[in-house]
Length: 71
Image 1 (cartoon, one colour):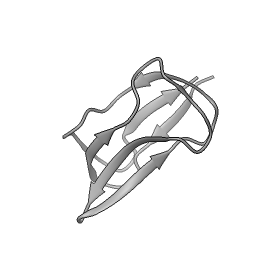
Image 2: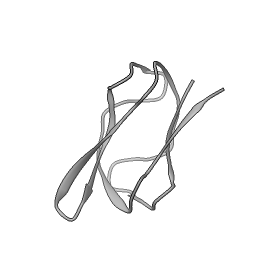
Image 3: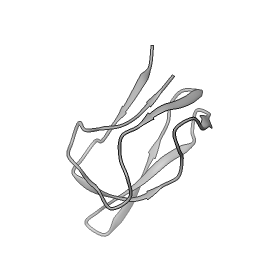
């Protein structure tokens, strides 16, 4: 079953650090969000592979929006 990584706040996607198919480990940063001039790293909490990347740089995410799926 895929682990969903979701946005915890409204923010701009400042930097995407992974691509679909990349292998990630617990503690890796997937993307960096920007909100109110603060950079917020989105950290993965499981080992796996990025099976879906749902954001791109410059996009705006709302609280609860899907960022990525890790399988």
